[in-house]
Image (cartoon, rainbow, N blue to C red; front, side, top):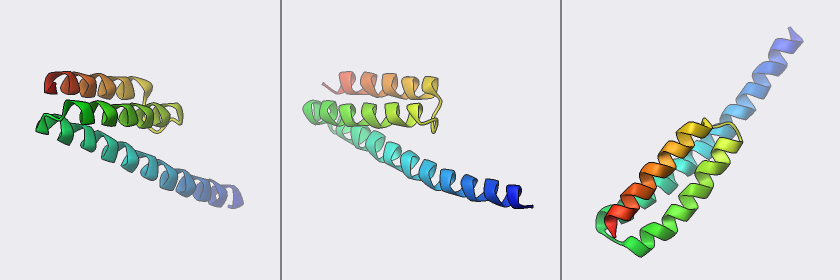
Amino acid sequence: MASAEKRNRQAQKRRARNVQVRTGVKTAVKKVRELAEKGDGAGAKAALQEAVTALSKAASKGVLHKNAASRRIGRLARAVAAAK
């Protein structure tokens, strides 16, 4: 069926895009966590801003649920505050 083939193509495109966004989010979060563990408060705060942007974009694109993104942002912010 042509419609099933088209849906499969669309799903593959979306999956590739979602994987890329999710990978970017993971990298940004990892960077914040590493800096927070080292005790680099200023660096962690700057990295937190990038991570918040990445998480918010992922939520707005539907890659992450908005509550999941919000929860991750809150936990990261708490970790950065504790690192200072």
